Length: 385
Ligand SMILES: *Cc1c(COP(=O)(O)O)cnc(C)c1O
Image 1 (cartoon, protein in one colour):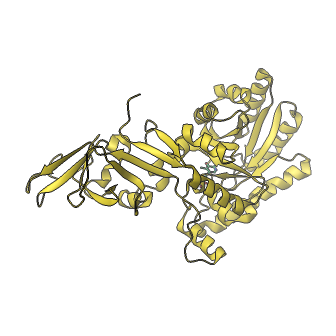
Image 2 (image 1 turned 135 degrees about the vertical axis):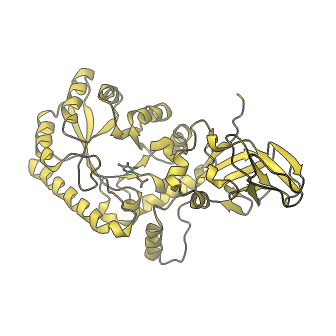
Image 3 (image 1 turned 30 degrees about the vertical axis):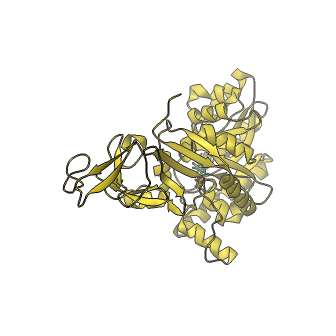
């Protein structure tokens, strides 16, 4: 197979570290569901899922039936998959057939789940998602009693796998009053279950921020996305942790992701010459330039034109000129012993130097999640120790 113009590496030891850390926070009992929507936040479902399984993860959450199929193709038979978002009606039987759990985010989905279960001849595993204040998806309050009656009546075909909700903005302390209100509403739905004598197998509401900072939101399962990839959900959640452990800094979560390419060509440019398209960069002196074989079509933000940096031979090399569709250039005048084919780190560590996703996103106004999840699926991902 021919090579792609860049590659992503996932560090298994760092991931194991993160899982251990999250496990310590949530305790031994709760199921840790690894949220792998958006191609595992850009890390690549195909490589990430088997790596996560090696680290003990057995439950995966996705945003769509499309992603569920990707996980199904990558995971072990025993692993469980949960669809938190869109599953088209015509795909419900497929999910039931494969034992894939899914959110029922409005009442109308229940009879459809029942129909699918009857058609396939297997019970449908449903998680009732409740509206508690995010006003995104979730069943309305007045739909809940009828839903419980429906579940009770059709227990043979419908498994009440979960009762859940999603916090809108748990990573920010300023939203705490809203999160508390959501939690309170959730608890009242649990009470209704109790009085009906129909309890869900799994109660779950916590995302990364809640799992790390709000122990009372950890029930039977937690849905952890961003933290497992080694990112604190927000500075506040990080500072909250520092406060808890009484430390000034703590690298408890480790990045597992690095993005690399190689030098495609090296050339000398005379003083006064322009580099790349237009007149965006003019050489102020004789310069040694490395040409890199990727650009904005490969997920490298164009906003880093003339301002980003890459790592070559353990040193920072500034970007000169515009990021093109498939190429960009960096200044290596100050770096000796560089040759064509040498490794270039776009995000990650090389020697003692580091380029973080955040240094990237500061310049581009992208969120970490946004930047990572946009990386093209075509970039190969490999797991390293
Ligand atoms: C994305 C998502 C999560 C995970 O959120 P993180 O903040 O990345 O941990 C959990 N639950 C639902 C419903 C989600 O959509």
